[in-house]
Image 1 (cartoon, rainbow, N blue to C red):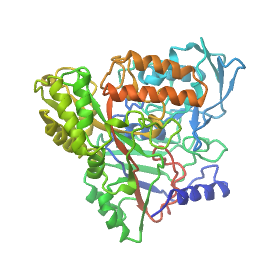
Image 2: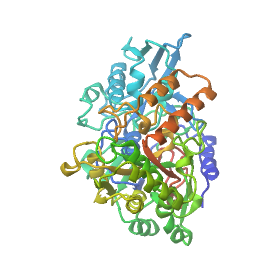
Image 3: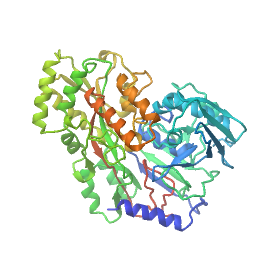
Image 4: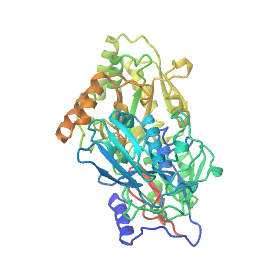
Length: 530
């Protein structure tokens, strides 16, 4: 098994070798990859799905990147901050072009930031503090705050859940609810539209005009050096088929392997496997607060007590080496990690079930069925709805499990119409820890109830007031205190169920080298023998 330290060593070896500029290959190298979900949506501003975000980093770029120390770094632009912290000046670096050949201009970036902020909860919050975003030349844009907001750089560098990808102004002016018409970015890969088959195949070729930064690559920061000519994403919903393809050499990399099949790989000397994203992901059970029965906080509390982290993670992951149970809504091993609300997870499963039954009875639950959505083509999330449904039934809920593909679930979750008209009551998904590690970026802790908030739409003036306090808190201890208070209220009001944290295991052919550790699967730096 390849360890994180081994992966980092590969990256350091690349740095030492001075691999800072991509050179032409003597023969076409094609990296064939099975991703964790099929790609059906292309607009990276309109989806929080991991597969869409990974696609976004292939095609598009960001003004700033985030390095392995969680610090924002220049990417498309260098920056300066005024002494009073209210003015941010970004200067685009030389040589940036869109995939259609036109130069990247500051006005493109202004339009992109505005569109991103319309779709990202943290971006919308930032814009409440922004007085203006203007250009002063073709290469310079200036963001001016109306009042102090200390998270500008962190948000412009964040790798999830909706990164602030830059695109040409003509695309960025597409209304926020509509898909952009073309995949034209300035990133290290170009999207091959004519070879795209939604849900089946996506193809990317190296952007020969891309000029990587001179610094070593570190997460989404530094030099994005592409060492293969083409990357082909293939959809294989059946994991056994994917592993057979990897072992035969038809596939070079599987982004996410189910843990129970790892013994098959252990017997093959031509295959390696390991954890590429050391931070992991949190599985979340989201309640729809707008529809009965989960429009009642007490009924949500009953569901919180009924569910069981251990059962959910055992069924989905199996091996405890690859999952962690904790109460922290921000991730188990981050600066803001807290055990606030842990009483909902304490005691035995039987004790908590008795508590759930008691609360549900006292709440006067009338038998309104719970429509639980289950994605059948996403292995890591296909079991939790089944296990959760059984626990909820034992507590006294009536539950219907609706099976569908991931793309249908992603579309259906955005509506709050009655269940009989296509609505829903509960779903499971997962979030990379970099997308939840503080109250600002954590979309599931948005208590505004806004139609534009992430699906579920909880309303909590208490949490919104605390989030405002967090935005202006500069002391880490104060931030921790506020974050813990938010977490406790989120548990008490049943914002969502924290089902635990897991690490994805990737597998690859032994000739594939220099895989990059990061918050998502990164395809720059990767090498394949010709």
